Length: 104
Image (cartoon, rainbow, N blue to C red):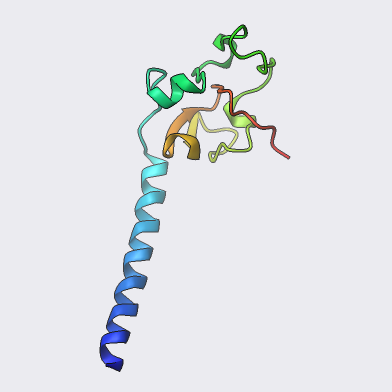
């Protein structure tokens, strides 16, 4: 019984670390988010923040970009980075969507 438990725990730990590594690798070389993606359209995502629909999304203000959003997981200097709202697809650092939240 003890041997089966140890084997299970070792296997579970290996699977968890493999999953974490694959998520990190995916995020670093993930798929760029398309403005035609249904989730992107629902949130008004634009790869260029200056093209945000100000009539439909009056919350938008000049200077708001994905790289200045609390949800953006890339470096501020990266051209794109993962965003958890879009299943970790890569959003443009100069992009914008209606879920923008100022970084603390």
